[in-house]
Length: 165
Figure 1 (cartoon, rainbow, N blue to C red):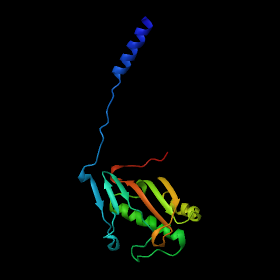
Figure 2 (cartoon, helix red, strand yellow):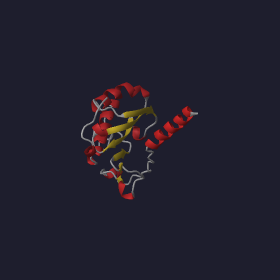
Figure 3 (spheres, rainbow, N blue to C red):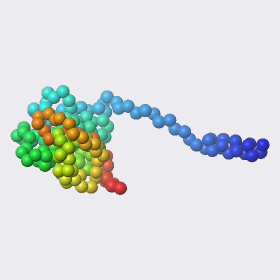
Figure 4 (cartoon, helix red, strand yellow):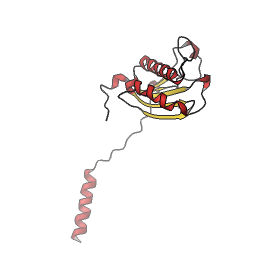
């Protein structure tokens, strides 16, 4: 009986010393949502935003390798398109206070899985140190593109240094 009392008493002491905190669900305020339209004239009337900013996080729309100056896909296959796509992403990120070092997630769509190995070479050039989480798959793409990438990034001013484990 004393053992049972001791066990119950110990349990009560442990439970009373634990502080249970209830996390309040945080929903963004209307002012915390910013829908950024494209700076490119050809995309001004698009039915989507180039980037959506929620607090310190940027959600970029999918980018293809269209050169913003020529309005055309570059010649040179997946290598040229992957580079231009990543340059387009880099430009949008910088416009909104981030950079490639602060990308946390990429979704990559290739027109064919045959381009996977070559794309990875280019991807490694742009993400040599901080490797974002990534999903890659193949599907049909618009405008004859060989690649489309969307990213989620955090704004650079909120983080002093990135750590790689």
